[in-house]
Length: 292
Length: 299
Image 1 (cartoon, one colour):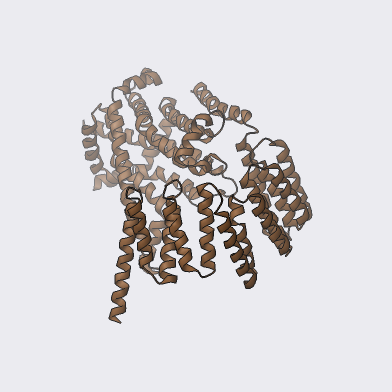
Image 2: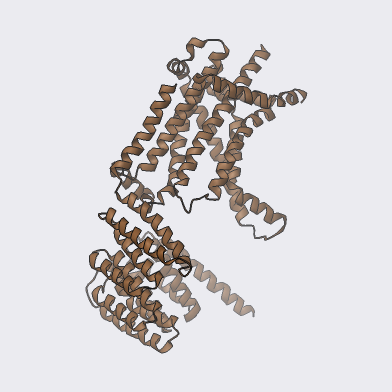
């Protein structure tokens, strides 16, 4: 317990160290920039699929799956977040987690003083051998997130049935119903915490998925609050964007705002991932050094 | 890194610029511009008396520029209708009707635009309390577009107008006239969907006249006569079931009639995809009937 208290005092210094590491070493930043670029490109692509020449292929698909109205202004912006979410899920499993691992590899190379091995190409080559484990890790996290969302949806469905118009029951109903997007964010953060060290362990120790998950839980149980704070504090930066989406900020006058809020979301999320995974990697490397 | 960042920016910006240039006058650009103009219209329409006179002229001029710029776009007729609406909101009903009539003339094959234009013409006459001309327009629609939706509903719309004005005698006369008209119309050859619509309005006439049995029988004819899912869509089936149930139970006080109708449907079309639904409805009605008899007996 005392050890955890000592470690808790290191939260902000660890986060600060991660930020300065990122800003001072573009080799670590670069994979995150690639993630950002690919996500923004796919978002931009989805934003223009209903226009020539892309609409000749995509318009019939959208028409069939969602209806004609979503090919027209301004309802195309209503469909955009949903389509982008599907793309993000595929991207997260197949690309994003791998690129985060490449960034973690850069941190590892930097810590071990190997400055020659920091170019993007060689980092990718070195990390490629762990690709399957990384994809499996991403699938596990995704499965836990989706399961937790389904469980919450059951709670939500129950809350909707509460007929109270005052008192504690009404308060619970209101918190659950109005807090839905924030609960989703919290569940996302908790799933990230539960498997926080899997990717660093796969990259640093070159372990396979199940061994990495086991090691992850061992380390997590030693420093649960530290890990939670390292993840949750940066995640708080998503709350303003979530609030703006929730109140449909300027959405009635400027439907394009939905697109720009997604752009901001991408930038903030990539920044969060960069800080969180760099912090966790630094902490993991430090813990490994202490245990030797 | 700077080079990579530059490349990323170029790749991100280039498609937007190219697509924007290629499509600067496409339908999407037109929809976007029109949406923003329509927002300005709705601001003025909230309180037309508070809007300065110049704002109406300014908005009409903007719509005019829009029509000129996007003259090939599908949304231009909607912009023309909005020009008419601006005139109407300003109180210049004659000018508004002129624009709506032009839209009708220029969009002979576009029933959606024609319906919209006629609807607004009727609204301008109603705003002037000129109900003689309202009826004239409905008669014109009936004559020129007899088998379209606006044409088919025109007789009932006349009756509804009298109902809103609380002119009961004229309303009843209009409903009777509509009923006769629909019966005559049904003798003609037409698309099944038009026939269904006419029968639906026929049933509405019966219900409006308190002829509940005839109304329910007409709904039965629709259900049995148009079983194909192309015509008997989920929404239409739901509407038919709820109306048959409501009218039979509420007006006829007859729980057995819906059961007879649905049983007939199930017997006639045993392979129908909605068979299970009808069987469930039959079961629920029988259960409800049993419960209400128990309640009546215990009293």
